[in-house]
Length: 610
Image 1 (cartoon, rainbow, N blue to C red):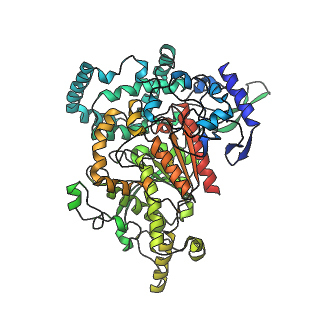
Image 2 (spheres, helix red, strand yellow; image 1 turned 135 degrees about the vertical axis):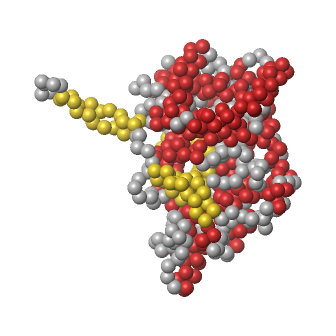
Image 3 (tube, rainbow, N blue to C red; image 1 turned 90 degrees about the horizontal axis):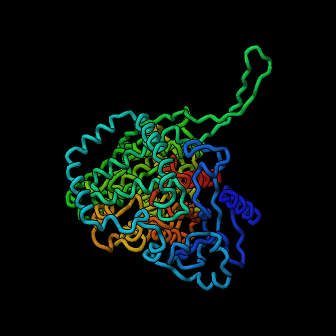
């Protein structure tokens, strides 16, 4: 019955929408919108949102072809564009989230009168099923916390050996083990615990099962080494089995001794692996570096990291990976920045996920540069490295900015916003009007320099090429996809301190370890000045922000969306319910994650083709 109600609701919505690119747009009406969520923190205009189903469903249960969560053949569920500024009821009880239909029956007068209300993250938490539905918070049990600390202490003596041992296992085997373990665990969890452990019963069964696993991590102390190891294992979640079935093939079989042949259509997984090129290029060969200048060590503001302050030498080497799907480089490229709160994360651990995204975006090549992390370095070093990597793409690899798409996860999304702001700042410094950019520096491949960094031609030609390179660096890329971007480095507040009670990634232990490093920028004033969300967004390209109403960076993502729109930037906001921080990285296991990946790829393809 639940599946029938979902299909009926979809058919009813289909009659009210018109096509717009890859999305569906509901026409504004005077009455209340059926898919409006029950609350909102900020005034967010009109955005894309996935309303929760009337009953918990898994990918298997709603797939008519009976495929599992690791071999979906269904058509991706598209988000519907709805206004999210109207709220129906205050989320003070579990019942307020129990049904989307009940909230949609509120009269238009009630909706309009409550549209100006805003509820705090603390009030929202009161409506959720916290702590796996247990009567007490396990973190409040002192004996349990003590046992976890003792276990963590003794684990510290052998964890490096365990980490290296696990890393020595071939990646393909690690991916297989992870998937086999999930396929054994998930059916048992669905049978025994069903949808009782997540923050809301309307989340998928898979997400409830993931919640039960990851919740207990908040009881153990977190160290930077453990954070870095965990994020380096992201590749284990993206084996070839987790890729959707993508290609139809016609198979003709003939029975022996029988002339009758049987033709059938089967699905074939796309198992072709991309070529991964290791990048190590010294930008000093260019002799002149334009974009990162304000963030060189000699110009960067002092921080609380004394060792970094004393080191005034900036690296000129760009390192990372390029994923190339075909024999020749693709015309367009995706610049990918990993996340990790500036403390952890690496490009190698993101290779499999990036390959998957690139394939789904019409086989777009992906560039994953490395950037320096805290506490060994500073926040300014990370920005410098990202600016240097972008300049490498434009001036060395020869990509035009319009052929570059940006993709950032969490803190990587914050760095990309800061990169875009730096490009606009550089353009203003050079006093070049954006309307003349394409006319004055039409790109036909003439600025590509040789692999050894030397430019051909006489002195006049070299001078002219340098001018064109400078003008190209004043053009913003085609767009930026920001997945749960971390963009506010001021004192944590709102959702950032309240939602750690149920966020599966940024939990209490992670917050306690990472919060101290937010202060390395110096004073609260400097933190605010360097926060992308508090800087001007004028001149930025189209942005797509993916976030969840129940994750820790929700408030700052909505603020970024509103500030960018205020400055005239096109912003598409993909909004989910009941998900944790960066949940799309689990696209091999969680239906909501796969929906988010489909949404992100459709948006990037639409922007790239425009």
